[in-house]
Amino acid sequence: MYRTFFHFSTSGEGDIVDITPQVREAIRAAGAEEGMVHVFVTGSTAAVTTIEYEQGVLSDLRRALSVVAPDNIPYAHDSRWGDGNGRSHVKAALVGPSLSIPVAGREPMLGTWQQVVLLELDVRKERSRTVVVTVTT
Image 1 (spheres, one colour):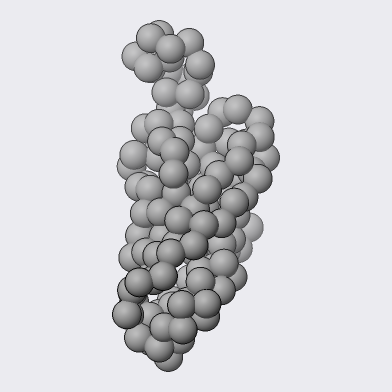
Image 2 (cartoon, rainbow, N blue to C red; image 1 turned 90 degrees about the horizontal axis):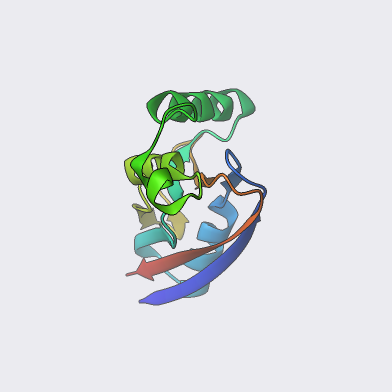
């Protein structure tokens, strides 16, 4: 097993960062020919998923998440904590903090137009995020 950590600065809610190069880097560093790579973001207001890293579909994803957890409705979390990020927690829970990808030929088995992305969902302007990448063979 090989584990590494990557740190990303995000610019606020709706920021989507392509972390595929870092996932590939971890697989190379692990020397994994075959196996699995697990990607996990720490924190309850960020998520990871796969998507085509193209501005149109990224915009569609942002819009879809805003429909599922809009910013113009009350959230019990906001009433309790007053930080205004109840919707951020909901979005992150729906997308999820982790994913696993098979590894073959020293590469993640991603589709041609499929990238691994970090979603910043918190309403605060800038955040520092830690992504844990674990490779097993």
